[in-house]
Image (cartoon, rainbow, N blue to C red):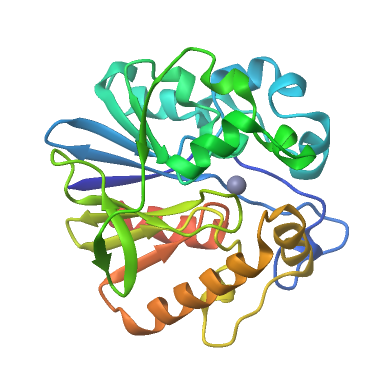
Length: 277
Ligand SMILES: [Zn+2]
């Protein structure tokens, strides 16, 4: 399957020193919303959506003042997934399935731009987003994103294993090469998404980590990103344990390319690789 790497929202958090290695105190950082567009025999599949056109039209209502200040998204409509799909020569309705690592606004913001798509999400994540049981969950989950009434496909823990990860659930019989791996911690139903591409496996780890060195043999993370991840995790112990599992996978599986949602270094490298640069 051919896979496109898309950045569906650039964020410029304050400041570079807190969010990169060796950054300046006076500059803003650069983060991305790394999404995948997969060409499958049954149409297009998106993994995560970044921000949508509706978010750009009403950012205070749909993103929130706190996250606008902290993340400083660029709010460029050309970055929205639907505009990038169209730029590739497709229509929004060609996107038949959207697989979400979780339902935070910066991952699910664009689902309303694809009204024909089925929305795949872990069942625990769906329940958490509908319940919005805590103050943090009322901030992170924005019901406006699913106000159009999408068709949900809720995935429970599957019986398959993949590269040492258990409870893996292939998306469907029609999409056997896309699978959901439970990696709870950042949210109650956070998951990674494995995709068998033409040149090996891709593992979109969502927000299971934020900086590439976190899953290296010498784990390290910029202070601001380390603080943010702990502050917003629903279960920080589970999040840390899952990071260790990903680090072990990165060290052992040469046929798997791992990346997270927000690391611009990983995105730039994989975007260039997919374009043959
Ligand atoms: Zn995120």
